[in-house]
Structures are given as C-alpha cells and as structure tokens.
Amino acid sequence: MWLEMRGVERRFGRTVAVSGLDLTLPQGAIGCLLGPSGCGKTTALRCVAGFEPVDSGEIFARGRLLSSRDVTAPPATRNIGMVFQDYALFPHLTVLDNVAFGLHRDARAARERRALEMLALVRLEDCRARYPHEISGGQQQRVALARALAPQPDLVLLDEPFSNLDIDLRGRLSLEVREILKQVNATALLVTHDQNEAFAMADLVGVMQNGRLEQWDAPYDLYHRPATRFVADFIGQGVFLPGEVLSAGTVGTELGVLAGDVPAAFRPGDRIDLLLRPDDVLYDETSPLTLQVTQKAFRGADFLYTLALPSGAVLLTLVPSHFDHSLGDRIGVRIELDHIVAFPRGG
View 1 (cartoon, rainbow, N blue to C red):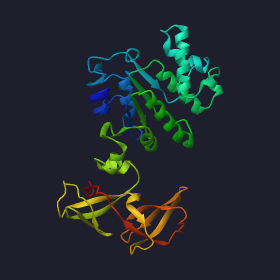
View 2: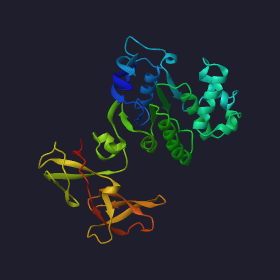
View 3: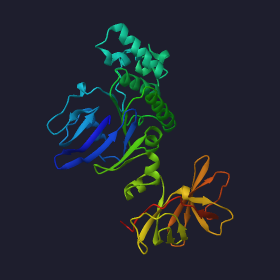
View 4: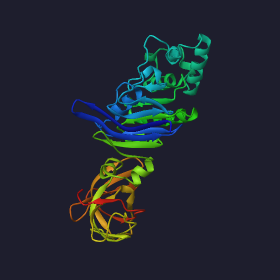
C-alpha cells in the first residue's frame, strides 16, 4: 500500500485526539477523513505530514517508516506535498514563482519549465505573472495545488482545501481538483467536515468520531452499508423507524411489513431501528399509504418533504419540484428497500 497507518494514536495530555487509527491507501487513490469538528481528522493528517509525532502505532509511505513512537522523520524529508486551508501562497512572489518555490534544487530553467507544466495542468498559464492578491480564491487554490504537485511528491495532503470558498465554487472546484490529481496519478489524502466534498473527490472515505475511525470505505458503501449507527446517522439524510424482525426477509413496522434482506446478526423477534433514507420513500400518487407534509425544503430540482406518521415519527422523501404540495397536504408514498440497514433498538 502507498500509505499505511497502523494503530496510530496521538494524545495531548489526557486527551486522546487519535486512537487506534488503521487505514490503507493504494497508489493513485484519493482518500478522505471525514467527521465533525474535534473528531481528530486534522490531527491524523498532521501526523502523516510529520507536524505531530505519534504516541503509538506506525505510519508508512511506499513502505518507508515515517512515524512511530521512536521515529519521526522530519516533514521536509517525507516527500509530501501539502495544500493548506488558507493556501499559504507567498504574497511577494508571482504565481509562477510560487509554483516553482519547492523546486529550489533544480536549475532555474528546469524550475521554470516544471512550474509552467503545472500551471498548464491547472489551466492557469495566463496568470503566471500575477500575484496572489490579483487572482480569485478558486485560482489561488489551484496555484496551491500546482505548487504541491510540482516536486512530484509521493503523497499530497489537503487540509480542508475548500472551506474558504463559497458553496457553488466549492462544489465545482472539488471536481476539478479530483480530475487534476487523477491526471497525474497522484495519491492524496484530504480532511473535511463536508460530506458532499468528500463524496465528490474521494475514492475511499473514513468517518471519524472522538478520535476513532468508524468506517473506511467507498462512498457508496458508507451510504448504503454503514458499519455503525454513527456512520448511518452522519452520512446522508435519514430517519430511524422502530421495527421488529419477522423473518430473514421481512420487518414489521408502523408502515406495515417491509421486505428486504435482514442483516444476519438479527433473529426473528429482535427489536430494531430501521434506517430509511429519502430515496427509500418514493412519491406515488396512486399509493394507499398517504402521509401529511409537515415541512418542505425547496432544492431546485426537487423538494425535500418531511412527512408525519400517526405515532409522531417522521419520514423524509424527495419529490420532483413540479409537485409543489402545501404544508398539511397528504401525499401518497411507497417504501422500496434495496436492502435493510438496521441497528439494535436504541443502541
């Protein structure tokens, strides 16, 4: 594996910021550590960069030991490119000179040639003579990425790379940055609290909580096959509906008997909390099951409706925006589960 973290722990006094972190990242893959503020994701990234030592465990890149309890390779020797949250461009240097900054060991002509190659990669050749304050935030981010890629690092680290940008630009730039990293077959690890960003960019995503990695998986599997209740709750939108396992393929709920493969850990009679996401609750004007709209959020192409059940529980459903229902309306829905995601009741 290109990057490997084995049982990594980092403490600050009595506070355990990262605990027992295990992950592997193959060459050319983009990984992401995702989680709420204070979950330990940035500390984990800083341990990989060499800005923080580890109290136990090991970090390897391309088979080389970078960090352990007894070894901490200096950041400058790790061959790692870093893209910081605030870009950290030098205001007194031109865009071209910023990109060339890490190539000080090369001859001047070679430095300029490589810097121009990187600016072409990020489509900023025309900005080479400008200074950072003369270009936009999105352009500054691409300059920072070009600078990180210029020395051909073994690994690129990105620390909340889009947090200073507006939402529209953030979404567009995350796709652009992924494309650029893939073009040069770069191996990268980023941290973010924004799951849309994580899903747009990463091949593998790790969800962290209280310093622990809850699940390291493809985005699709995090959404459809969450390993823990925290992951199920944190990723995407959804609600938990009380139910009881009736058989290996059915669950009894307030909505009736729902069919789907029940996880093997459950037996008939077990009381569960069933995860229902908006895409499990389909709008159907012909359905005999009708529920009252209690909240609505217009999202352009669709509405996210909150629907009340008689018990007081709620469901969420996405409905095309030309079906504009009012609060208090009853709409027909049907439940379609590709598979059942469930956890022990209340646990």
